[in-house]
Length: 252
Image 1 (cartoon, rainbow, N blue to C red):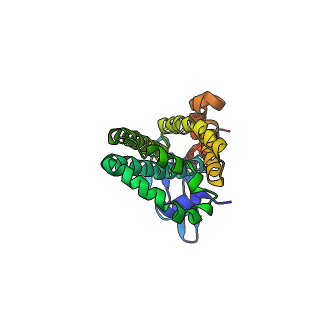
Image 2 (image 1 turned 120 degrees about the vertical axis):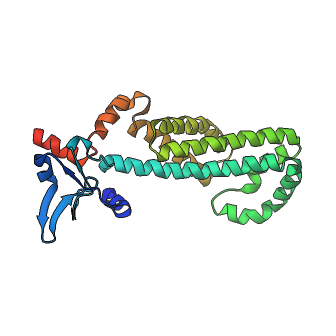
Image 3 (image 1 turned 180 degrees about the vertical axis):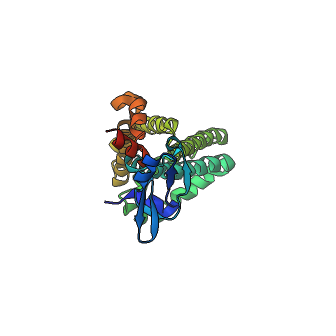
């Protein structure tokens, strides 16, 4: 099993700290052949040399570790996915606004390119000539430039929401988690309808990812009061610092 604490320390460096209280400092300090070593507050390994920080135990750093670190990694993977989605929607929306007068011409050219694209799309189980894209090309081919501009604005707004979602998830903000659940969950009925119209492996994979993301955020991050809600999550996160664990062990 991957030790994400070690991975994080390998990328960002260890976090060592000397508490002013001798009883706590003794629990984090040891002696090795290389001299004095201090235990990293994130990964738990002993690091040679002077600690990076010092002060009262209550002011010790509380790095993300253990379960909280694994959750943060998943949140950031979701953030990357939402950032990619947001970028694509922004590109489509802004392009539609900028070239709205030439959209009918562009759609005609795109439809002519479908036969050449079909071998590539078939590899992911997507029949492009029978897809929502083909139907959209037919539907939007005769739409006025003003309507296309409004449509582009809506698409670009969706892209901006996806990027806001990505930022909130990357920073592990609770508002980002709620926004992700609401924004992603709102499109699940549309995804189900699309699969009923014509199911493909690609659609099923995307639907499964989005459904799993929503379920994971609600259950694991305790949104909407699930499993004790925010109070329970904050209590759980109090155990994030190794020094906190050491102090609790002494009390026990």
